[in-house]
Amino acid sequence: MPNRPRTQIFMASTLYGAATLAAALDADGFAPADRRLLLLSNNATTPETTPSLDTMPGFERLRGRFDRVLSWNETISPFHPGGWSPRADDVPLWERYLRLLWGLGDSQVELIVESIQVNPAMALAQLFPDAPIDVYADGLMSYGPTRNKLDPLIGTRINRLLHLDLVPGLAPLLLTEFDVEPQTVPTDAFTKVLAELADDSAEPAVPDLQDLPEGAALLLGQYLSALGILTPDEEEELHVRMVRGAVARGHREIVFKPHPSAPARWSRMLEREAEKLDIELTVLDSPVLAEVLYQRMRPALVVGCFSTALLTAATFYDLPTARTGTGLLLERLTPYQNSNRIPVTLVDALVPDLEDTGERPRAAAGADTVEGLVAAVGYAMQHQIYPELRPAAERYLAAHLDQRTWRYFKRRRLTSLALPGAIPSQLSFIPRNATVRRVARRARAVQRRLKKRAAFG
Image (cartoon, rainbow, N blue to C red):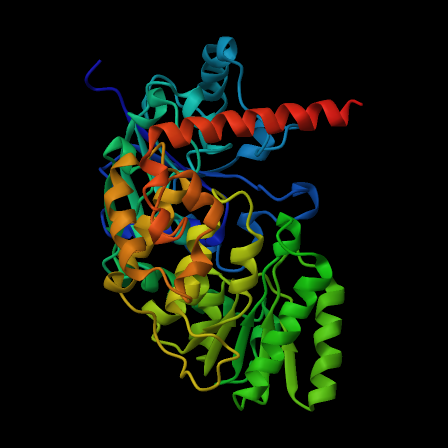
């Protein structure tokens, strides 16, 4: 049936992601379609207590680009979007149900999703097994490797990776194992959409944005303890260090944007610190994008840990930026393959340290600064998926591994992959010696058996 209508389904879980989709649409990044549906997914741990994306300030400016807005949470209720996927035998029934529920009929379906390696995007791709897929990335993870091996039945259906040019000129690693073509969402289209969101936030409906001090330091809170990376106490201390660091750089007016899911007690601790330092602190309650604040208050400094918003500040708005806590995170991220590793690495490499008062905050550098580093870290993270990156990793490690860059690698990881830097140079023949490797494997096997016997008495 060559004249079947075409329906595009766009899945989004964040306002930043929805803005990325809107920018791609405005830039004619998608072929014409008979209908465009926006499918919202609330992936919070407890979606029932977290505001839905379509209730956030600015969303109404995006709604008109789509013919209909749907809820994935309501569709699969009572299951959680992050934990549900269809059984293989049930896929035909589910597809028929969704076509009826969403009024798709027999139309050709095209999917545009984020984070294809995990649910809910993976589940949606399984439910429409014949649909071509575009993937879009709304943050720094697009520069890292695919976090796990993707089913070829899905990977070969992916046509493009749409991404923002957060590190100018740096090509994403994500999905390159399937020769997926990366395509940049035009920066001017994206910033124009963000300007729409800022205009919408100027309305009285968002009262705590009306009197923000211009030129203040803006601190971006994250909720890393929810990911198990930091303890709540460590994260509180991280935010306090942001305040102290901003004050040490001469800022007396500070705006703190907490993560929407962060506990209120963190804000109270910062307020006590502000009283101690005799500075003016404003804590935002509205769940607005950091980019809206860039336009509303034009901050003199943007401080964060490894938020993508640090790179949008530097690259898209030419704002001074500083980071803190990345060294600790590089140590704490486990396993080494943790998908946050590339975002943390990029921010650590490109953004000045807040506590280094001798280093002037600057805009982020380009691809030439980090291309080799990303290839080396990406290979160390997922060497089985990206074996072609090994020569680049070896070149980088042989030439650039020093006291500064060791923070991005683990000696044990380099040893297991027989990469430069794993062992002293005079012993570098060992990883390439088959006999030595065989003896080492036997020794490890014996050691494991002895540990098991000791454990069971």
